[in-house]
Each structure stands twice: as C-alpha cells, then as structure tokens.
Image (cartoon, rainbow over all chains, first blue to last red; front, side, top):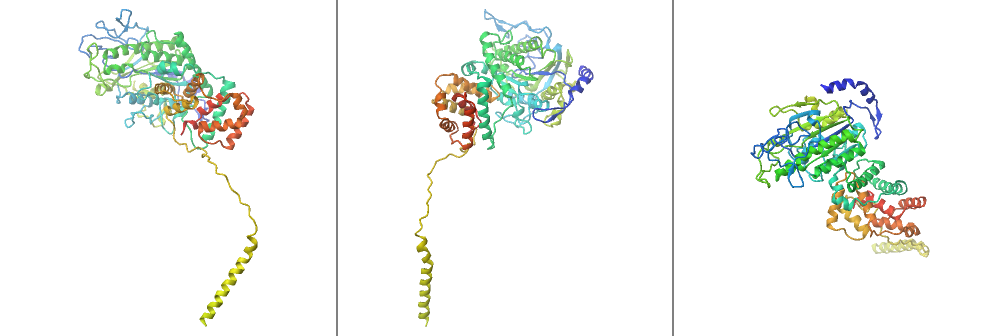
Length: 443
Length: 170
C-alpha cells in the first residue's frame, strides 16, 4: 500500500519533524507522526446526498421511476453521464438545461480512493457536520449549542501549534447552527484553538455590501496601534474582575490580514475576478470560489468547506440534481485551482469529500415542477454515504467496499485528517473520539 | 430606723450624681469639630455588569450610542448576519464599527474639544460607554496616554471603548 511506502520513505523527514519545539502557548511540543501532506481540504458535501444519485449513478431511475440512469458527478466519480431527460445542467441563453462540461481530466476517484458504502449514524445537518468535525456521534447534544467534544481544528492547533489563520471553516451560509462549529466548549480545548469561520455568501453578499464593504482601514501604526493599546488597557481592567470573552487567538497581524482580505474580496467581486468556478450561479459555487481565495491568501493547513445546496431535495428534486451536479463541478474547480493556481499547495494537499448524511429511500409527498418527488432524511437510507480521498500517499484508482459490504464510518474522518497531518496519536490519546480508526486503517 | 437609712442612701445618690456631673460642666464647654460629608452618587466599580449582550443588543446599543438614534429592524438583522458570517467576532465588530465611522451622522466630539479638557472628555466617555464613573487609576492612565500620544483622536478613543470587552456586558 502506498501509505506504508510513503511512511518508510519519509523516515528521514520524520526525524526532522520529530525535533521538539516550543508552541506559541509555551508548551513543549514534539511531533507525533509524519505528515502525508502539509495541507488538507475537507469538503462536507453538500447537504444530504443519496447514494442512488451519487455513487450508484441511478439518476432518475432510482428515484422517479423514470428509466434514465447515469453519472451526474463526473468530476468526482467515474461513469458515463445520463443521456435522457437532462434536467441537471445550467440554463443556456435559450433557457435550456445544458450539463456543465467536465472540468477535471482525471476524476478524483481515479486520483484517489473511493469508499463506496460508508455509515453515517446521524441524519441531521448540524449533527452530521458536528460528527464529521469531532469524530463523535453527539446524540445528546442539541442544536444551537457549540460542540461538546473538540473539533479537528482544535486538535490541530493545540497539538501542532498552528496559527489561527492556518485553519479555516468556510460555510455556505449561517443556517443550521453551522457557525457554531468553529470550536467546542471542551475545557481542555475551546476557543483559543478555534478556526476562522467565514460564510462568504453573506460576508460578500448583499448584507456585506451594505454593512462591511465601506469599512475604514485604519493605519496600523498611527491609528490601530494606539486604539489597540487603549482597548488592551480597558480589557485588562475588565479581566481583572474575572471577565473574559472567547477569542480564537488571531494575532494583531492575522486580524489585519483578515480585514485586508475582506476589503480585497469586495474589490475582486466588483472586478469580477474572484476565483469562482466557471459555473457558479449557486451558493455552493460562490462559496467554493471564496474558499479558493482563502486558500490562495492564507495557505491553510486545514480548510473545511461546507456545501449545502442539495438540501433543496426536500421539496424540489430537480433543484437537488442541479445542485449535486453544480457541487461536483465546484469541487472539481477547487481541486484544479489548488493544483494550478496555488503552488505552495499543489501536490502537497489531500482532499476528503464526505456528505454529512444521506437521504431517504422513499419519497415524501411533495412534487416539484417536473412532477419529481422530494426526499427527506430520516430513514435507514439516510445513513448511507460515500467518502472520497485523494492526495500524496493515497492510493489512486482504488475502490473500497460495496453496496453489500460497507466499509467506513463518518467518525473515521477526524482521525483521517489527523493522520494525514501527522498528529493522529494526539487525537487518539485525547480519548475523546468515538473510534480510533482512520479510513487508512480500514483499507 | 429604716426610714433613716433610706434617706441616707438618697443623699448619697445625689452626691454621687453631682460628683459625676461636675467634670462635665467644664468639658461640655469645649466645642468639638464636626465633619460633614456631601452625598455623592457613585456607580460601583463595574456597575454590576454581569450579563453578556447578544449580538443584536450590542449592535443596537452601539449604534444608538454613536448616532444617538435607533437602528432599523431590517438593518439590525442584516448586521447581525454579517457578524455571524465572520468567526473572529472582534474582527467582525471592528469592520462593522469602522463602517459606521465612515457614515455621516456619528455624534462624536471634535479633537480640539477633546484636547481642551481631557479630564472631562475621558470622564464623560466612561459614563457614555460604560455607564459608570472612571476610577482614579483609569483617569491617570488615560491622561498620561493622551499626553504621550498627541495624535490620538476622539474617534480612536470611541472605537477602543466600543470594541472593549466591558462594553459587551450589561
């Protein structure tokens, strides 16, 4: 297996990595493992995806009793596209549906390993993404509450000493309590190890245009410095009375970088130069475009992108198909962008794609304009998902598991990210994850 | 016999009272100094703030403070969404507030007015933002800070107070 070869070959590099150093917190740090790549991009894809329309490639045959099957995710998966009743593309000038052209010359499946049948025991959006990011089934946790167990961002920052701007969580919107997932309430981790969250469709959307775009950029030395000194004094007085606010620990320089990034994005938006996918009409497409910009600017060690447009499946199956097709295009663009536009991350980044849950086998009673039934997420079929991983040291063109032989669980994602970035032992030793296995351990 | 004893006791009591009161006759003539304090209504050190403002409360209060007028409900929702869309809340607040500062209508003393009476300015700023009196230690810090930073403007002071952690509480 390639991973083993990789580990053997990287002994020397590992020795160098294992030299202890002092973390920003002052704690002595010794790396516990070798990195397979220096960057990971994890796509929480894309708001509840049925196996039938994704890896099983049944298109309308598996949902609407219409005999047309095929692959509408041809940047991620191998397989020929449907040829009949195409409702999933972008509208052209004649208002006809035209499938988006394939973007990647090699599918991610060809470039990596596909876990074809994976278990996801939670079937809610927030609980699903929470599980993906914490490696725990948070059955007892309600909505609108921060995770009770540490997130992968916190493990990474605490055990690897990464700066705040090296961990990003880019979400398609602020619904479903998604912004709460940037850090947990766990006493040994928490805000000081959190990720930088961004919901770009809002920050750079209509609301942001109105309330963020015209922000004054204060001079760092003449204005910001004395302003921060006064604030520091005021906060110290307040802190002396035992009051402190959660802070994800961006330094003054990092805060300045983020503010400049926001300012620059408005300029790029106005000039039409944001790194959006060629077809980016949807929120997911827009989100991916800004995620590309985040990566280009900050070169994060870990970027998590949450896409959610396919959730329209509850009431509009046609929109669901379009969103699924669009999300595939967007992820293909992101991978292509990393390899061709961000030299620091090219060939040094792993990608992981995993839906937060599946969707029902049986439809609900809502029909869309094409008379297609909608699908919720509550039955056993909702616990069926796929995982896809690609990057340095990961087997290419490999399929693990099948419809009748499931391999993998949604809780394996957190250890997988940790293993790629070389700190899986720290995560396991914390004793706070549901399962110690990464996806690599299941191959 | 008994009557005689009783009369004797009464006389002795009288003598005792007179002898005890005798020194008072002289001492009562001496006028003591009397100190009186004017009543001052002072708010406590932290003004009993122990509840964190919600984003909506923070934004509507800071807007009312800076513009002396209420924010519309629509704008409040929009700004709340903007703040939720950025994870680092200090960064989000700073961008929102600096956007406010770029708008017309912020009621803020001129820099010359501020420099005319720094003592009064900082006292009023504490009352305006923190709803409490300044302590002597705080006064000393700011007066010395203003002296060593002659280019600090009233806007910068207002930004620092608006962004401070104490202002997040009520």
